[in-house]
Length: 162
Image (cartoon, rainbow, N blue to C red):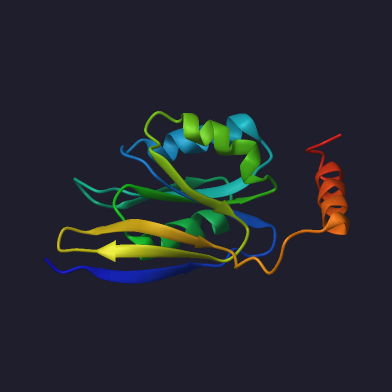
C-alpha cells in the first residue's frame, strides 16, 4: 500500500481564527452551527465538513457568506474524511471550544488558532486523513519578568482575567 504525505496551508486573515477537527456524522454542520450561535450569537463564521461516505460532498453552512465559502474551499483542499473546519471572527475559539467539543459527533479538535497552520495530510488508496498539525512558529526563548507582566496585562485587557 502506498502512502503519500501532503501539507495543506491555512493562513487566516486578520481577525479570523480557524478551528480544525474530526467528526463522524452528516449532521455535523448543523450541530456546529447551532453550538456557535447559541454560545456567541454575534460571532461571524463559516463551517465545512468532509462527508466520508454516501455522496462524499463537502457540506457547509455559516452566517457569513465569505467565511462559509472559504471554509468550503479549504475543506475540499484538505479532503480528509470526516474532518471539519470553522472560520471564525468576532469571537475567539476559547468562547466556543467547549460547546464544539460537546457536539455528540465531534471526535477530536486538532487546533484552534489565528496563526498560520500547516495540516499534515496522509493519502492512501482509500482516502485522506489528518496526521498532525503545525500551529504557528517555534519558540525563540523563555519569558522573563517583563513578558509575564505583559501576558497578564493582555489577558486582563481582553477580559479573561480580572
